[in-house]
Length: 205
Image (cartoon, rainbow, N blue to C red; front, side, top):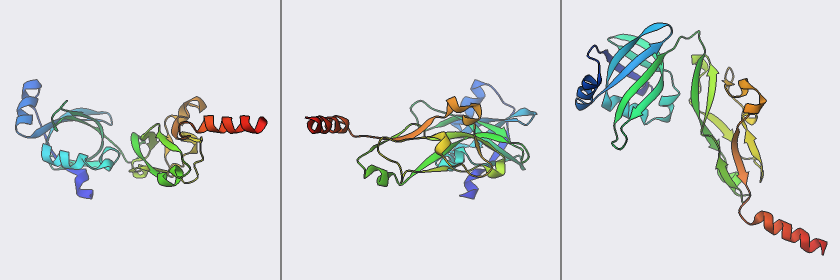
């Protein structure tokens, strides 16, 4: 899998919509590399290599290596434009990183033991599928696990309930308690609440 996160790129000087259209016809993807107080660089990558790499979930939160005309540059993918109906990648934005500087990234969430939680009769509702984090590049996780084994009926887990890896902080929680987003809820099945209420009424009578 490691090779998928190393992509060859060429610097391009032929810019503009017409140039980008010609690149796509040649099965290449126009891209731009920026960040770390350096000048942006326009690039070209092979579409087949990018397409294969982006099929891996970790591609979007993994430190990537671009071989730019033979020079290795570490970066993160910041944006990807796709064709509205064709299975084609139209453009990529990469941002340079430095091992000593913290990065911001959206990391996918993996929900564990969802079948265990569902055995209570709960309807599991995912409120978010990724978490915005800040950390050094070496600490960037490919995904964050949320264990639902002990999730009770009617319970909601928030960001503050999620155990993040060492060195990783939540961007939302850094803004204050009011940004403690709901992550997942074990909703009671339809009709359950009314059935319980009916039982209570029968008992009262």
